Length: 382
Image (cartoon, rainbow, N blue to C red; front, top):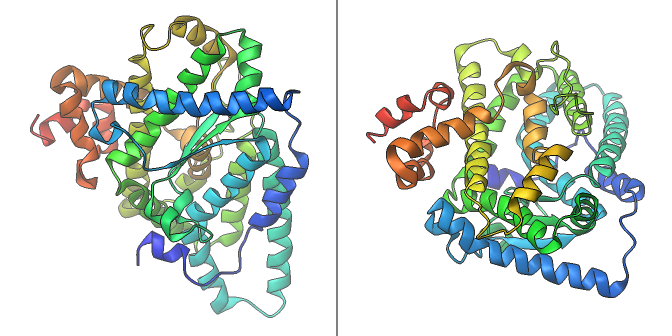
């Protein structure tokens, strides 16, 4: 059974009340900048224009045909509450295989009174997750969500499409004012970054199901201890809003290893290693493509980079959620390794040679190859 078919199967008793999480986030989301109706309309139109304008530039830099006249996904300019609701839908899709496996196991062992306990746990976790999303809703500028079309509420047309590109207008406006940068340039720069992630999944349409399959494998490690999984899930959500250390990196408890603490055999370790490599690849490639953006594309790009990097930059929310869930930040190298892998491959084989990575799952780099690009280049015969 494919991950997509699982999302449309019968509902399961959830460990998380996703509707409550969305409602809580909407109620707690802080107000955005004060704007008149005409200003809001103009900003929305301009963001849509910048999203469209960014596509040929990503195509030029990435040399991926999937980026040419890209129209596989929805492009939505949203407010903070809508962003939070969209993320509860995506989290639900990502965690469905894991929660379904846990529910199936519990169905064989649960006593009659346990359902009330599960419902209470779902309510508490949903409210807590909603609070975290409300906080994060004021921080995120944009996000490409490859899993949105797989939600049970999606129409057939949506499920046949790609993911969903979200641009959070209040936050973009807030930051461009805070940094005192050119609004049009800044909006284009934000769109270029998010469109790069969109292009990755357009170039490899099999990738979203592949990632869900790998998450499912990791979830099997936790089926035997649903309580520990619930704690890990909530801790991962809370860490999305973690404070930054003096170096700009996320403050982490080094003793907290997530799924890593539960690994027992080589097969389990291999599943985690593979997902680590895939996520390192996606972020590293996006960083390299963004390094190709020059003043010809964004005239004030140097100023934007300098001021934005000084402000601090969060990872994508879905990416950070998964990494914290499985404990990668406590034990694995930073995603700079992914960018180094891409640069090393491009230096030897060119961007066209590197783009073989998107052809099929077998071409994805392993974790050792991420740390030593020569191994991947030799395996691919480049």
